[in-house]
Image 1: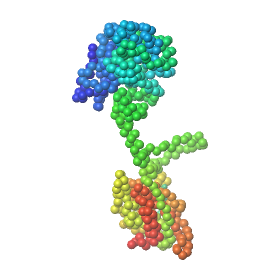
Image 2: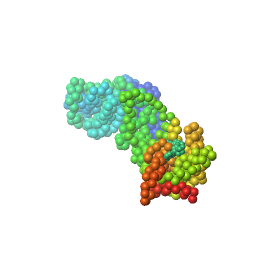
Image 3: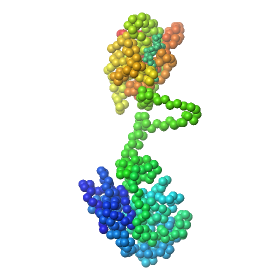
Image 4: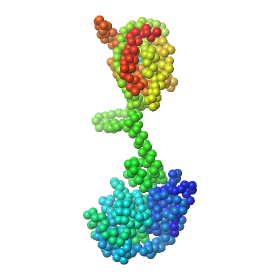
Length: 550
Ligand code: CAO
């Protein structure tokens, strides 16, 4: 009885992705015979009646349409036993020993060439030497009954835990039996395929390896067609494994079309996650894998922050006692932001000192007023004001780059963030519209925002919209450092501790309060000469703060 592809709806053809039975298997009604798959779904094609699989007309990867014959079933097991013998297959009864090549039969090309059939003979292809493994899985059957094959054509792919092995055809011929199905477990000498070849052609099989020669002399018939008939009469003892989610080290479940695609694209299927039934790999999985690999590699090549070699994980406890302390949310987020900026921005840092002797004199002169107003006035307010004035003169520093790095996004507002060191991490509140604020306003706002930061009272709005940042370590110390640009801003000013230094006036050295400045900038947006001019202008303004009111 012929089993055909049922109505598959409005698609022209579907792919055979799994053979669930082998020739000789006994099946009941509704037992799955093959699995077919379209772009949208996969579907089992069941036996419509009980019987014994007589032939499988399709192979994995074939495209089939409604009404195509896929399998022929004999009415029952008895019929299956008798029917192959009823076929004109003289090799069945011929003893393997009578074959001129019997001694080399188990070399994976076991053959019988019966004297009664001079025009053609049968050639059994068996599993060659697979080394010291108990069994290997049939992962691809590349031929179907009726296929014409040539020397070198792929018949079956076998896979163990460690390797896969192609079993090629070593003669021209026609496939008359396929003894295995995808998923079967087979051992050395298990029959794979029977070919009908032109008479006498089987007389020159490939020379066996020493280990297979030994097997052949011990049991030449085990791999012969005589054995194959036994196998055909009794269903193969190894059932098709129940498909389940793949475990680590488990064989890959993929049809030949998928394997072919993977081979063409150089994809290692063990790396790909299957989205098909029970984790089966489909073509889209392979394509998706390639896409993800390409995008991650292009991201790393484009400097977008991936593809970086991992820092090794070390068990520090091996060297001495350690304790674990969580970073906390703010430090964690800060770490991510800093890492992102550090990876994305092309950093360069320009250092200079500003002579703030006069600024400090002026600032100290304001102290009494400040105390009266309840406002603490530090160098930072002047620094922020001077930065704003400099930004107004150098608009590309008060800007961001667009995503394609094709345009400056020049901002018409001047919002300057300043780093605040808190017990829970670094935060950067933003003073809005600095260009509209004087030194008193700025001083008051610095104190207010720093206080809110330390009390964890900053709102999202307090930390958004910055166009430039200042990180002052002046109260702490240091002669210079390389701050990380607060991307997508393009520049940040690091401030060190003011120290008294000898300053050359052109005619003499005089003591001067020198403020170390370190401008880090994104070199994609800003050239070194521009940065040099920016810093020079900034030091001028800080050296003569009267200019800030002009
Ligand atoms: N040189 C010398 N003294 C300085 C100085 C400088 N560059 N800057 C500030 N000072 C002095 C101040 O004048 C003040 O002294 P007086 O009280 O005698 O006037 C003292 O240092 C303390 O100042 P402050 O820290 O209270 O105020 P500030 O305006 O200078 O700074 C703030 C405010 C919030 C920026 C600061 O407290 C802070 O948190 N800084 C750390 C920033 C940081 O962590 N940056 C690193 C980021 S990257 O990891």
